[in-house]
Every structure is written in C-alpha cells, then in structure tokens.
Length: 462
Image (cartoon, rainbow, N blue to C red; front, side, top):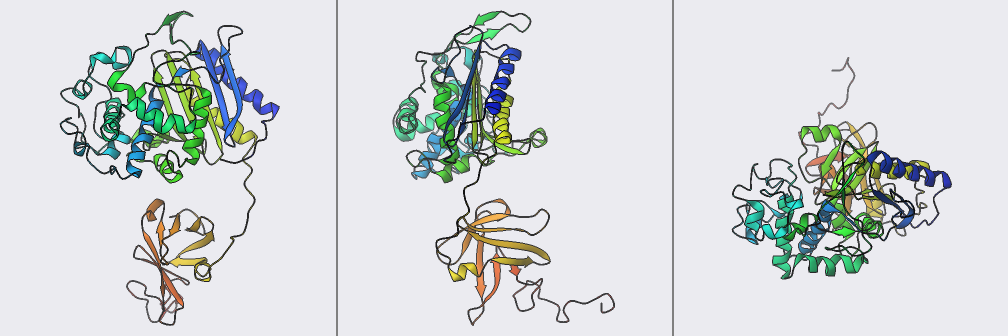
C-alpha cells in the first residue's frame, strides 16, 4: 500500500459514518464497529451502539467466524513455501485414512474438494466441540457429496482438515502455530482463540420484534481452524495490510497474491454475480472494482474484511448479532466511498536505473499474425497487450538467461524467447509456439505455415 499519511477529508469521514450508522440502525445490530485502512494504517474508525455512551473502539474483540479460514490458509501456504508440502499433493499423503484423502491440499483451500458444507448434526456452530473429538466425527460416514475437484462447494470440514494438516506437519496444536507464526510476527495481540476482555457479547435479534436473546459461546474444538477466532478492527486492519503487501516474516508478497487469485471453478450464478474464491480468500468484482477478503459469521457475530489492492483501501466491519446488517455490502461501500472521494495518488514515474540494450530491443510493436500488440519494458519486467480492443495481456519476469516467463492470463507459465538470426539481429519472439513478428506475417521470420511468396495484394491481384 502507499506511504501517504494524509487524513481523510471531513466529507469522506461523514459519508463513512453515515454508512455504518445506517447499517447499524437498519440492520438492528446491538453494536457495529468499522475501520478503514489506507497507506498501511487506519485512517478512520467509526462505531454505533444501542447503548448510549458505549460505542466500541478498535480494541474490542468480536468473534470473526470464517475469517479464521484466511489465517489457516496462510499457515498452509507457509508450509508450501518451506517445501514441506505441495499444493497438488493429496491429503492422504499426510493424513491417511480420513476418507477424503483423494482431495489435494489446493482443493481443500479452494473449497473444491467435494466435501460437505457442514459436519454431521448437531450443528457445530452452536454445540460444544467436544461432541466431535476426531476427524471422523467432523466428516461423518459420507464426507464427499460431490466429485473431487469438479465444483466449488464451500466446506467448513475442509478447513478442519487443513488445520489438522498444519498440526501434523508442525507437531504442535493449530492455535499455538497460529500464534507463533502469524499473530506474534504481525503484532496481532488482540486476536485469540478465546475471548479476552474487552469483548462484545453475541446476540440474536428477534426478526419481528426489537428484542434480544443471548447466543451461546462454544469452543469449536476440531472445527476451530474453520471459525474459532476473536479479533478487533485494529488487528484486522493490520492483517489487511499484510494480505495486500505480504510480509517476509510470515508470507511473501508473491504468495499472498496467489491467495488472492481465483482457484475454484465458478458456478453459473457466481459468474453472474462476479464472485470467485482463491486460496482462503473471497474475490468479487463489484462496481468496476476488484475486491478481496473474507466474511465470517457465528451465532451472535458477523464480520467482514474487504480490500481493494488497486485503490490502496481496506475496510473492516464487525457486529454482534446473528443476522441483520449485510457486512459484505457495508465493507464494499466503505472502500468505494474512500476510493471515489479521494482516489489513490500514484507514485511518481521514474526511469529505470539501468536499461540493457538487448531488453530495450524487445520494446515496441509486434504482430501475432495480423493482431497488433505492444511490448513495454518497465521495472516490473515486460508487459504485453493488444494495441486496440480486448485481448490477451500478460506480464513477464526475466529468467536470467534471456528468456521470460508469463505471470498471468493465457500466458501464465509460458516461455517468451527472443529468437535471433545468425548475425545476432532480432528476428522474432517465440511465445509458447506463437511467433510474434515486427511486421504482419513477416516473410523473413519463421512464421508457422510459411508466408505466401507473392506477399500482400489487393483485390485485383488476388
């Protein structure tokens, strides 16, 4: 995120307060607290409460439910980055005998493992975790209602398996690993598996009357990696910065970017709604803006974390009610309000400190057949894109041997290789067998299928 520490304008702050006030009043939440992050720090906090004079602040804990899954996913990606597992490995390799071992680690992270959405009755969110002491109690007799890898089907038991995987490979309880490897390095001192004062109480609000009912607070036991945590807007604001930038003490920028990348096949309704799922992160396209993060709920609590990396804005919203305000919409609106009212000011353009002649030679206009593309050289590597309309775009990183590897889209993982003539001059680019030439169908390049010897012609010459 940017390094600007300018305060938000009064009009922006009022718009943010208005949005959370409407959410609390119309959603009938006993309390609602929110924070906005920009430039790597909290630039606004707001809260509303049904108890006058007792608005919560950024240090009050709320239960965050399935936002816990993002923390668990970070632990799994750490194991991968250390070489202790591969995301393509089947679970059976590390946790034999679960009955769901055919699913890969990546499929569990992306909710494509075919597992059921919930554990067998009674409902795990409102009953003690002691009722499900073993993985077999969480999975039940028929854990796979869907074929493995075929569809996105959100699964809480899937993240229980990932928590068990972390415990197996670390040789320590999930909660301990979480504290040592994420919470302490990032300074998330108000995030914990059990509530710590000051914390909000969880309430159910009667759907047809302005009346309250306290919700039970259960230790989820084996299901903890799917939804156990308590946290604050202050801690989740710091976590949002980490999920946008990475932190080499915990997980690299490249790995958190991987978490934010769609990894699950979308249902038809998901395509229409513009939503997808990465590796422990929800993704949505809303109002022309790409948003990532996660929502969460447990009886008595709602939570949402929404990040727009491109706008350098994130929002955290927490409430202590079982249902009511739609916090995903609130979080998206808080991001939008700031991004539209006070757009991100880009960093100054600066020239490259060094330009290598053989790299500069690649810049400019290229043709794949008759399709015109432009290739730019920048500090980020190479960027290829069509000169007009839509088409395949990609960034490329250097491999150190004169070749480049695609980082996104159609060309992700594909090799771009400059091809030179015997005299050393640049002939064309070979990109995954596609030949890019300086002129359309350049007869002096190795165009697949060759180029007609008579060259280009008009209608009377055809």
